[in-house]
Image 1 (cartoon, one colour):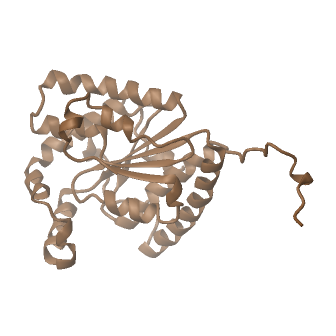
Image 2 (tube, rainbow, N blue to C red; image 1 turned 90 degrees about the horizontal axis):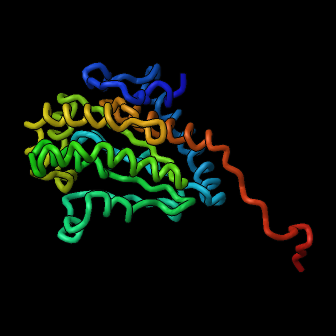
Image 3 (cartoon, rainbow, N blue to C red; image 1 turned 45 degrees about the horizontal axis):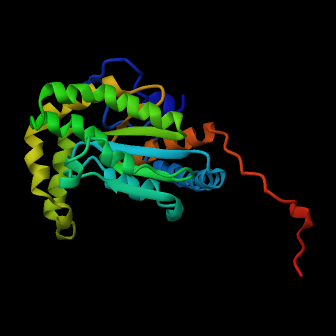
Length: 269
């Protein structure tokens, strides 16, 4: 069974994250084996990105969500290390600006969509508007409840217009999150990564878990599936995300465009 088949959240099926392992390794016995497999995956991804860019018919949107310290930044750094930056963009969505608050919640998302031929990566995304706003009661319940259908329709529109959407939930355990946050406190070279908000959110773990379960249950669709990625072991997290991306790009059967002229007639003096 492929990574895609094993990790996909079935459409319309209620999700309980307690039923998903956060520390599995997919049959890989050691970190060394996983890193070796990831090297092959990143090489394939480089080749497939080249085809995507040359074909210029589709774009790929990668959405990364997860609890604090689940590894969104690390996943981007390790999985995408071999791709051409010219055809890749990364957007991090933080607290909306005054301008963004004056528009609908999807306005800033649509602006950040990758162009045809490119790969766009979202570090957090439009799903913040059914996560943090729910947990902290920023908008009324009837407002954020209506956003699930709006998001599904939005992503279907993207799919119908050539944007392939892959959404990854990086599934980390509460104990592993605590360990990683403590590591940041203990290492002066990582203090720059610390935000008081990271620690302020930890007491809301159960509320966020419930919110993520609703996201996965309501918004995994045939056109924009969610994947639950075991994230306690960083090396397997990276391998799983990279493998799903490669499998999806391979399934597109991308072709290099034919030249608009007769190449055989070109001579170089």
